[in-house]
Structures are given as C-alpha cells and as structure tokens.
Length: 216
Image (cartoon, rainbow, N blue to C red; front, side):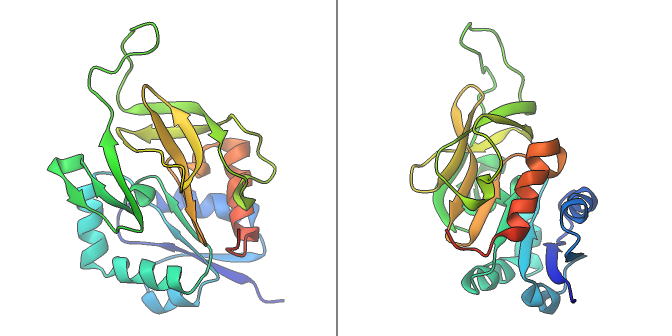
C-alpha cells in the first residue's frame, strides 16, 4: 500500500527537523519530506509552512524562492495546508515587525507587537517574548480540534501576535492582550504555537491534520 505524501516547505526559515520528526511519530501512513522542490510540493497530499525568526527575513526568502506562489497554488488546489508560528503570521496581510512588512494576505488582518511594558491583571511585569506554555480556548468546532479539550496547553515562543477576528479565529489565548492562537479558512489552518513542541495536545493536532481532507 503506497503512502500519502506530506511535504514541509523548506525555504531556510524554520525548525524543520523537529516538525518532520513529530509528523513521523503520528503518521506512519505518510511519507514525510522536507523539500523546496515545487513539483514535489505540488504532488503532496498535505502541505506544511513552518517559520521562525524575523518576518522580514521570512518574507524575503518566501518571495525570493517563489514560495508565495507555491502557497497560493496549493491552497487553490484544496489540499490540507498547515502554517506554524511565523508561518501563520506570514499568511496575514501585514505585520508591524521590522517597521512594517507586507505579508501574503490570505487573511485580512494584522500582526501586532506585544507592548514592551506588558503587565498582568495585578500590574506585575510580563516578559516578552511570550515563551512557554499557555492555555488555548476553542472558539469554533473544527476537525483539527478532535480529541483536544478546550483550554489545553500549548507551547509558544513569539513577540508578535495576530489580532483575533471572529471570521477566522479557531482558538484564542491571552498574554496581556487576547490573540489568535489558531486561525482557519476552508482547507487552511495555522497555529501561533509550536504543535511539534506541545506534547500530547500538539501531537494530537498534527495527527488530526494528517487525517483531515481539508473540508470543514
């Protein structure tokens, strides 16, 4: 029996090894490939866009290597598509990071910076970046939430966040301001947290992604 193909887009910006290892752990019926080969990505049944680092550098490489076109083509093809961390932020219209960067525009929203003087409900200072475990509240029913209870904890590392919007927020989190921890539309899903670092709940989400056909 031939395996399905899941490709993780390699444009030089992402913790690709750990993402691939996590998928290998939960999806033995998939062939997992880290690749920049556009033809191979086009052949894939499921596609993942990871990302870490500054959005300016990520977007520069995305455009230089034609990943913007690859993303658009795969979304149009209707195949399940997952963005992770900066890979999620890149899907927005604009980011305030690096004095303002135009992103891919698949969601009409903005990426904002956590305030440097961020405080909690008791007016105690909070560290930026937001780094560590935090609860994510389910805001819509979605196949990628299967087997994961609302307010489960996931692992975050970020200084910028996507503003929540009722039209596309699948899960929200609070660290000072409330922000979108998960966004979705049609065959596209993305997470601000790192599912590959989020133990049981994160692995369940990755497993759900491999079982998802892209329909809501």
